Image (cartoon, rainbow, N blue to C red; front, side, top):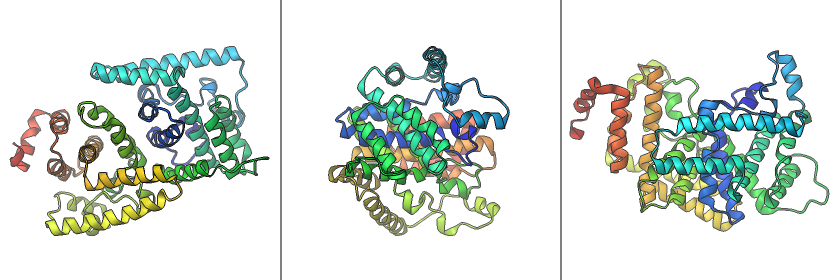
Length: 423
C-alpha cells in the first residue's frame, strides 16, 4: 500500500506504509534510547501506529481530507500550500479520522488472542492520544521521518514541495531532543542555521537513517528472480519479520522481546550495500524468466561444505558492511547493532534461532500470497526450506495452518508425497 501523500504528489514508485514503518521503528529505537525512554514500547508503537490503514486507508495529509478536488491541476495547486483551517475545523476532521481508524484497527485485530489484542490496542491508543511519553515521542518522530522522506523525494531547491512537511512537523514537535534533531536536518539540507551548535551524535544518527532508507526502494531478489510484479522491498520484509517477532514472541516467555524486536529491525540492513542475498539459486539463474522458473521447481541440493562456504562468504561480506554502516554511531549503540546482527547470522542465541525461523516463515507467507495472484509461481522449494529450517513448535504449528488455509484439505496430500518425512 503506497502512502497517499506521495501518490497525490505524483511521486514515482512511492514508499509503502510498511517501508515507512520500518524506518520509523529504527528511528524510534535509536532516539528513544537516547532519551532513556522504554525502547521496547517505542518500537512497538512505531510498528503498530499505521496498522489501522489496512482497512482505513492512508488518510494523509488529514487536514485536506476529504476536501481534495478530483482535477489534477487543482489538486496539485492546493497541495502546494498547507491547509489553513480553524481550530474547530481541525478538531472536527481529526475526530472523524480517529474514529475511522479506531474502527478499522478493531476490525483488524478482532481475531487475535486477548493479550495480543489488548497490548496492540492500548499502544495504538497511546500513540493516537499522546497520553504517555513514548506515544507522544513516536507521533512527533513519525512526522519527522515523513519530512525526511519529502526532502529525499523533492530535494531542497523546490521549497514549496517540502514546506508542507516542515509545517506539519513543527506543528507538534516539542520534545527537546527532537527539536535539536529538526535543527540537524535543517542544517544538513539547507543553509546553515544561525547559532547552530554541532550535534555530532544526532548528525550521525541522521546519516544512518538516510542510509537505511535506501532499503525502501530495494526490491527483494527472490521475487525479482521469480518475475513477481511490484515485489516487496527489503524494508517491507523487515517490517513483516518485526511484526511476526512480536506476534509469535509472545508465546516464548523465556525470550527477550526487546532483543527480538531490535534483531528483527537490523537483521537485513547490510543489504544497503550488499544488495539482497536471499536466494541460493543466484549463480545458476538463467536470464529468461521461463527458464528461471524451471530452475525454481526444486530446492538445490548442495553439499554441506558448499553450504558452509556460501554462508561464510555472505557472512563476512555482511559483517564488513554492517561495521561500515554503523561506523559513526556512538560506540555502545554501534556495538549493540553489530552484536545483534552477528548473533542472528550465527544463530548463537535463543532469540537468534527463533528469529531465523521467523524470517523463513515471512518468506513462505509472502510466497503464498503471491501464488494466489499467480497460480504458476513455483514455491514448493520454499516449503522444503521451511521444513529444513523450522523446528520450533509454535512456528511449525503455524506452517501447518498455512497449508490448510492456502491449499485446503484436498491438496495437503501433495506435501505428504513431496516431503514424506514430515508426515
